Length: 344
Ligand code: ASP
View 1 (cartoon, rainbow, N blue to C red):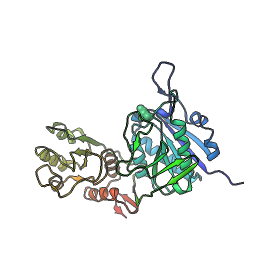
View 2 (cartoon, helix red, strand yellow):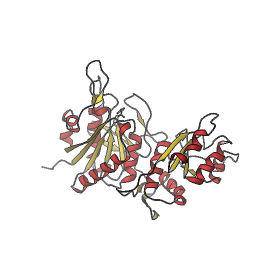
View 3 (cartoon, rainbow, N blue to C red):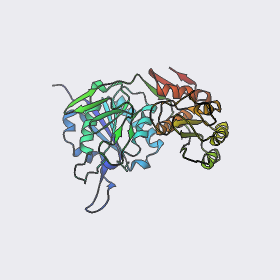
View 4 (cartoon, helix red, strand yellow):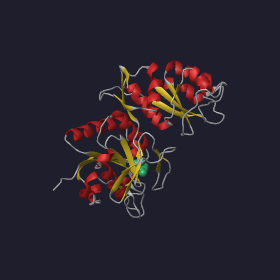
């Protein structure tokens, strides 16, 4: 008799762990073990072990929680588990799953999932998402994919996934790419594999770095932007218009900020790749680059904020940041970045 694959589930709270009393709104109150108890089918797919690490809405998760999760997951992998599932709230799942991907370089599948409807609602999606996530975590073909997000039977790469709807059970999407696979009945289909992965070596005891994230808006006067360094932030991510543009009067403000802390600019369209040399007016993408801002290339805004924070925590020199964002956009093989510099 062949033994079942071993899957470790780490529960952090969120809607998937929430329920409500009659006529009331939901709160987080379901442990990982209770969650698994509601999906007996999971135990036919894998030998599942469950650990409840947090019971919070995902807006309350913080980077130290992910560093703690990393050490627990790495210990589970050392003990021989074949795959890992992380359950949490969906609000910050695009950031946490990407942060976890950057913080680790694991071969075993690591699958983040959650739910849009709490367990007291008709058609609650938590059990189906959890079962699909366990199937992917237990699937040998999912090895080496990096951290994925399994939701509504779709498999998304953490590098591209976004929460794109406030309430739909198909809230997760990978704009411009789509899911890299899907689950159908008991079958896991991997349709695409990433060309490479990025790993940022952040030691467990690394000092935190704080990165602010701002979006440039119509007729922005730049007053908030100029306050960022004085507030003690170590870096800034600015979501610029279109291909990477800001009003002409904002460009010198950003340049002044960039003299003090690294400033990365993304596109507030959150799709495609930013421009480099299409426009030359003050505030254009080429102007921002010439003023010392770092293009995020194709990394979306919330992902860029996570990446810049981890790069700063890893002690990566400012001169290497542009290279790192280039690698994050187009990695080949496993690219590992540490304070000593990048190594492809
Ligand atoms: N507010 C919830 C959270 O992120 C939403 C969810 O889980 O879907 O924790």
